[in-house]
Image (cartoon, rainbow, N blue to C red; front, top):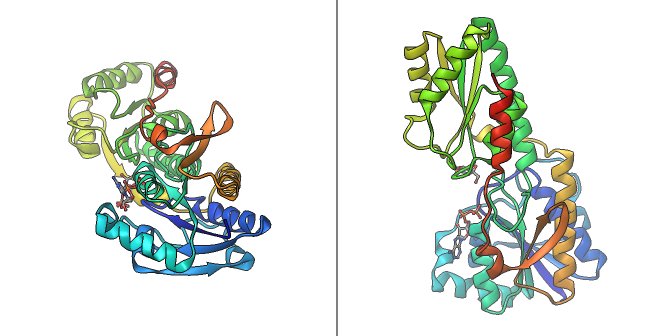
Amino acid sequence: MKTIGVLTSGGDAPGMNAVIRAVVRTAIYLGMNVKGIRRGYNGLIEGDIIDLDLRSVSDIIHRGGTFLYTARCPKFKTEEGMQAAIENCKKYGIEGIVVIGGDGSYKGARDLSERGIPCIGVPGTIDNDITSTDYTIGFDTAMNTAASMVDKIRDTAQSHDRCSVVEVMGRHAGYIAVQTGIAVGATAILVPEIEANVDEIIEKIKQSSKTGKKHFIIVVAEGVQNVGGVEGVAKRIQEETGIESRATVLGHVQRGGSPTVRDRVCATELGNAAVHLLSKGIGNRVVGYKDGALVNYDIFEALNMEKTLDFDMVEIAHETSV
Ligand code: ADP
Ligand code: F6P
């Protein structure tokens, strides 16, 4: 392969820039050229494609976001969009692509691979919800951001003897909520994978109050249904315990910021691995981690895998928060 492309797709995640850097530097090290495709699959359809050299990726390893921009691109799901993308691959001499994103982006990579453009998927999302890997780039940074925000919320909850109910991101999954909840010593954590029981939380707050506890943190994953959101949970807690309660939605702050060391290192390792595969003419695969080891899987197999929350951690959180 002489020329490869790289793009970021779906929601951005801290560490995406570090992947792009690793891709560009590794490809050039192995004697290949690199094209940057901007705004996800949109750039491929519209020909928004730039040359990347060694210096194009200087000074980005520590920056959040993605300097190639990212987007969701519904047109890429149509045959017309797909054909336009393939035409541009031919026009720009792109023989393989590193796609950095989530399972949705992997589906696009699969479709391109099926049509003769070998792709390698690199897991980039704060949600850690990609089925084929234990870890996704951006997760650690997002959790650290969420934990530091909740620490600040705790200061004011403590000063006022309040209960703070905090919503964290995660789309349909509770990975961010569980680990952040443990890290901030939350009294309770609600995740979409387990049916929410606000009555239980209220009982726990009442019991803990009897042992002298005066302020409380409840972490709620955004995907939790049927509780009226964090406002609804806070309202019920206030009404039924008499403890003044506040609701906070952390939101997109969790998607930004300088990536942690873990995210920078994983990004570099995974970006490097993706290019080594392409350089050997191997496509249609995704890279990731399984039980601490670097792995790669066939993209079809990867998209059919299943992954569940670590329910032992949920239990540990429960047993240690009283
Ligand atoms: P993520 O990659 O984070 O899961 P999305 O699910 O929003 O994010 O997907 C990102 C982009 O990947 C979509 O906007 C679309 O361009 C592409 N994509 C998603 N699903 C498919 C699909 N079934 N077929 C082709 N492309 C897809
Ligand atoms: O997938 C990352 C994520 O931040 C989710 O946690 C969240 O549900 C979603 O993206 C938000 O998307 P948007 O940036 O379109 O608001």
